[in-house]
Image (cartoon, rainbow, N blue to C red):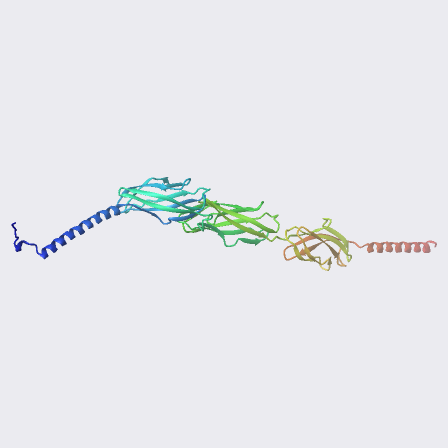
Length: 400
């Protein structure tokens, strides 16, 4: 058996072995880094799709619109599709007013894409998912949107009023201001309708345009809706409901308002026989019967009677005050008119009035002062005396 001996000078030293190991380790690290860079470059080129609102509460029958964000570090064409949606739901992707299936995305290319979902009116409460696929040459990215169907979508849109009840008279117009709030990330449009009691004129319109019947509300903003309620002239005192409806985005918002009509009193004064003239002798009292009528819708309180006669005349009333006249009722008053003792025969005007805090009324009477019957009697007596005197003179001096 022969042994070959390697000269000591040809054996690798420990330093050489360590160098070889370091070289091998460096090669391994370089390979890992290269693979990582290649993989990272591929991922960097992939498209990303997202939305600000990945979880949304909705109601059955509501329409949902969500803005999608697509980003990419390289310009590339990206195919878009609805990969998953609940049965019976309508989901589609829109952009530029069209239903779309793809877009170009890049560092400076940010297309506007919306996910439109129509929730069926018979949708049960629960959790549902819609998945959007964004397919680029380097792979597919998925976006999952969770839609929670609830009985009432909390505060997505609200229609409120600072004052739900206004009070006034029958001749007033009642003006309400409503606030329509859009708490979503998308501009919304609502049609406006208003309904009041029969015979009322009720309108609802944006405060910025009184003739418009629809209002636009920007995302995360509010709009003011003006409501005018005008009751008929014949309305009675009481509470009356007014309902305003804002319809849009697959939902209806209602504001229930109350108008309290306090009523108004209206006084009229007339003579009982509808005759506006009277007559009498100077110094004598003549009665004029008046009827005070409340033609309004509220009671008349604390009526007082007054007059405007010629100088030296006297006018009194029986009664002199009327405590109350209910709506639609009347009260009788007698005016005693006494011309001045020295009143000359002729026509005069006497104004008779009734007044209260709520209303007043008056009537003008043409009063004719007649010659007193006593003057006739005096004339007859004077004539008789003259006749008797003539007869006496005739008998006495006629015999001679």
